[in-house]
Length: 173
Image (cartoon, rainbow, N blue to C red; front, side):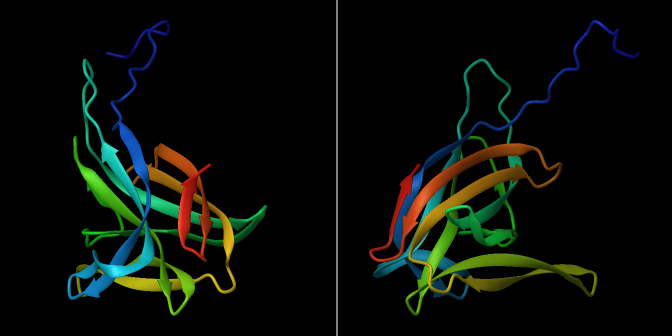
């Protein structure tokens, strides 16, 4: 039965994504991917949660991230399909009350470098390859982090951060 014209369409429930913060961490490459460990503060990680809300239908979602590094109004680099620590795919499935870490940059040979996952479909299987995007000569600028639903493209979250390379720092704007 179609909705009467006076009845608004019911909005579907959305995850309650919260940014816990941006941190400078020690990252190392392992056989399973990039992990948070070591003693060299060489990575930028943004931590997220999908917190339950009282008196609401709580839902999870597949979440894709995009990162944009800016120098003033000039876009230096933009990637989608970012690197979620602990996840094989180019997205993370946010469960209710889950915690997630997005790799927003890593110092490689002194250069801030973004890591993205590229989806490859071959031999009736899907693979993910890691691509590096060095930000040559980047010293300071703005990082824009945007999260969208990987299934339907719904906007879920956006935040801006100030990033410096020497010393490596991140602060919300």
